[in-house]
Length: 216
Image (tube, rainbow, N blue to C red; front, top):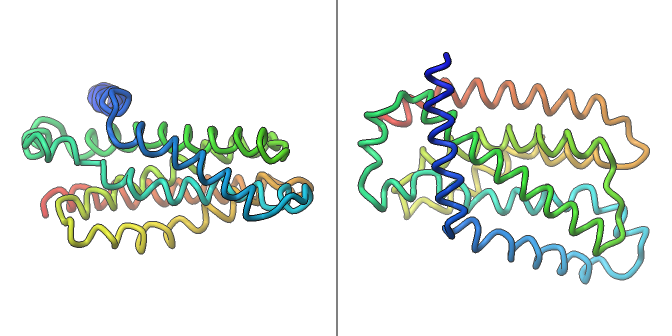
């Protein structure tokens, strides 16, 4: 187990370093987040009560749309460099999945956090404390989906549009539970438990099918 965690940690660190060096996520996602928050403020109008009502769901909508380019980047660097098959031969499917999903969980959680902070600052919509664990739990579950779909459609450029068709419906429970957990006056506990259950199921399914996807 320690060997698996060590290899997965190395893969996750490599992914984070590659993205931090200026790949697509660092250059595309932050401007997208800023534009989405500004447009939401303009679209929903100047009424504070309306902005506060929609604020808990806005970070999750932004994260879901940002997850599509993240899914495309799961194996992009290795395929561009021609070392995807080599990487698959050096580490086990479990190590590869854990490393890729771990890095994506970090990026998804940071995307949610950055969006939530911008919304709180620009739309005058305070962030509820229960929204923070919901953001972390949602990031983990989405990372499992994004990694799985990203590998399943890697190299299939003509089918890249399927990512949004498959990913967004599969992530609806995260959107609903995350939004409700961050809504004032709502009991957050059952929604957080739903996110925990979602994570367990998503990780179990992804862990089971990931080796099969690598063979295709």
